[in-house]
Length: 198
Image (cartoon, rainbow, N blue to C red; front, side, top):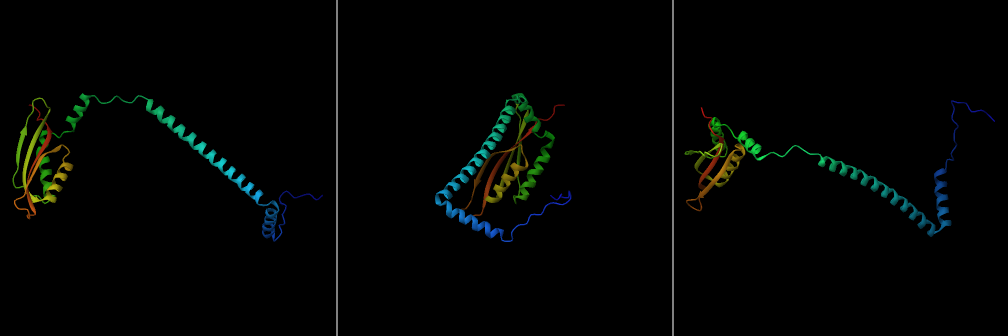
């Protein structure tokens, strides 16, 4: 027996017509086996596929169970205590702009009106003190004359630009039905901190 050199691998010789011969052999075996055997092989392959799929589902279920258990453990850990009513009130007061910021807030309101094509020709301002509250309500009444879309744009823009501004009321009046402009009386309330006592 001849020794094989360590560096050389044995070469396999394959017949040049291997693929057609395998196809012919497969057809011959299928004809010999008959339709019952073919159906049996197909059923066996389906059973293997179903088993593989069941294994995949079991693994997925195990992963989801682990995630659910981890979430349940995380939910069981006590969190920081919920804010108390006093803490919520303090946060509310801290959120309000200072009393000295009223002119800046009004300038922002005028800017939003100009962007909405609203001419503010007249305005009434009235501070409303409340001895029990730690904040000041600054009532702003604006009579405006413009088309409805501009008034709507102004209302939305003002409430978005000034977070502590609230819409108290709005009344619409139209002199003539065919008129494109409406008379609106808008009442805002601006919430600010009370002026620091000296």
